Amino acid sequence: MYANDVKMSWEEVIEETRDFLSEEFEVDRNLILPENSLKDTLDLDSLDYVDLVVLIEENLNIKITGEDFKEIVTFGDFYRLVRKKLDL
Amino acid sequence: MKVSKDAISQYIPHREPFIMIDNLVSVTNDRFESDFYIEEDNVLVEDGHFQESGLLENIAQTCAASFGFLGREEAGEPKIGFIGAITKVEVHQLPAVHATIRTIVEPLHQLGNIYLVKGESFLEGRILLGCEMKIVVTQ
Image (cartoon, rainbow over all chains, first blue to last red; front, side, top):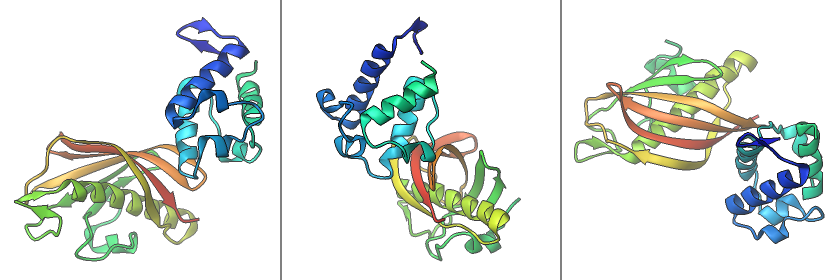
């Protein structure tokens, strides 16, 4: 994963993800923890998932599909999917 | 031309006096284009100008007609699209009556039956209004 041409570690990817999610969805970043529910914490409705897909693509340069979301309950699930897509 | 004014009501649920699109000029999966002549007695005309609400409705109906057209090509019957949300609205200019506006819509993202699209309307090459919409398409 690269940001501004600087290679990021997996830990940095997680911190970057917490930053853009907390900013976009106006949620305390301390609530974005692996064990917490993605949907409940970010207060997502079905339309918000489109915003999430756009954010992920813009910030992490990976594509998430509707099928991918079927396996995501917690941020931990989400991080595992991101890591797999980034091949880290 | 993909769908002419006479046939447009086959692809959208709207009826007069709330049809805000004339012809569907071109439709691909990546780009939709329509035109619309603004009559003096259009219900969304005020003070001789087509209002922002009319431009937004025109973009939404361009989406609806295009998804309807694509749905009929794929499955034999048109799909119906509903506006889920409108964001990033920028109004540059309101067109006067008797103008013909052109509208271009580009789907940006899709998640299941929800599409994020970018819509822009133009008059003689000048942008009138731009926005993003989330459109929910019936399955």
